[in-house]
Length: 299
Image 1 (cartoon, rainbow, N blue to C red):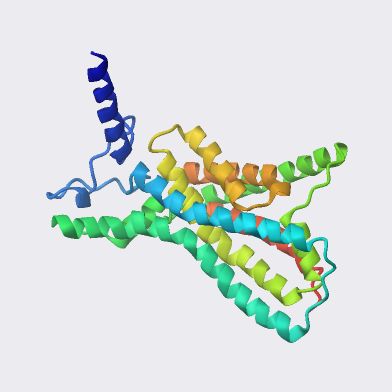
Image 2: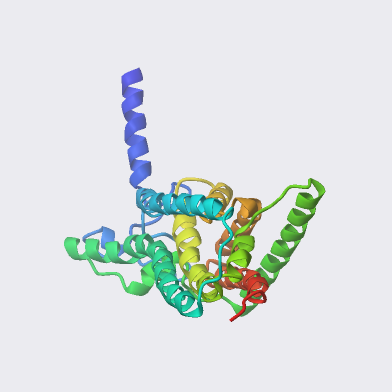
């Protein structure tokens, strides 16, 4: 009897691992998963076209190297903080700015590989292999959250998100001052670099405001958060995706605040079923930080 129960448990876990959706939300497989065309999902459905295993594979392959690079960057920053840096000459700084712009854009673009593969390209490939109707590109993009949203709903979500971030930032600063805890954030690091590498710092700000919100929202809220919902409760998925989002920034001084921002962004993605409001909030938050640093630039 114990062996039978063990084998049943293994079989059950394997079925759960490969299942496209959890048992609480039964879902007829998309047309690309069957030889005969199946019923199309409702237009307002918010259902992943990838499995939980796809989610874990994409997250490990993406965030594994990313965390290594983040750790190396933190070590480099800590070693350079004790050395008085001299201002770069304008020509060298501008060359570094162009190279930094390209490299950082490519690094942010890595966040798009797993979502686009598992949500868009893989379903189309499977459909061709099985002789099933090939799903349109927009089906995978809609599953990630790149879908329209009502203006009133989006405006309300962004307004609540901005209020949440302002309150959290105020409380975070108040607690740090009350406890007399020195907090070193990425903003402080960029302010230090602004005096010696203004053009390179400007390139970093452009990536942070324009590119990063788009790529990170697709990965963390469109792909990772949605994939987690296949096997765990929505609130646990909100918390877990927010914690990983905060850690991925490598900003220990702002980790608590980043987690709160991640919570707000995940909730907005869940309630609006769209990535656009979260992208707008993410971009606005980064823009406010960039304004502080931009005032210190001497171009």
